[in-house]
Amino acid sequence: MFVPLFVAVDAIGVLPLFVALTADYDPKKLLRLIFQSIVTASFVTLGFLFFGQNILRFLGVTVHDFMIGGGILLLTISLGDLLTGEKSQRQADQETIGAVPIGVPLIAGPAVLTTTIVLANQNGQMVTAVAVLANVLIAGIVFMFSRPITK
Image: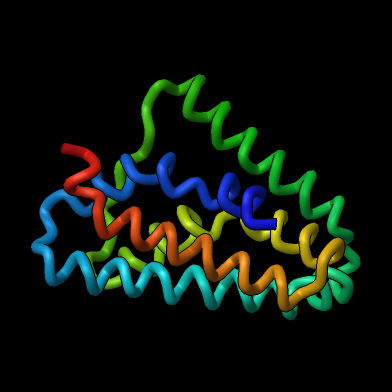
């Protein structure tokens, strides 16, 4: 269960975006931002783990529908980036950048949420919760050492 979530979180793949977003942060502010992103990603993922299926069921959405919808969303974003050749540059709010976009969707994105639901159906919620928390903490550790890693 750890490996699929490790691939879905993709802390190493997200690292360049994290470094670009936090290039001008001092070390103290960076630690606060990392903590904010870990807490946000943990709450969102665990909330989705424990309540997501009920919400999806209430809305009449199956796990497979959610997987297909997430894939289509990622496809349209990717095609937009490929076809236009430019990405919209919006300045992130310095106080909430840990929650959005780093916590969600960079750490706890559609792949993590979908993988969490699938693994919970196969192995149970508690084991999945432990694997999710372990992977989010690993992402936080990777982010803490982002400057030495990039050097």
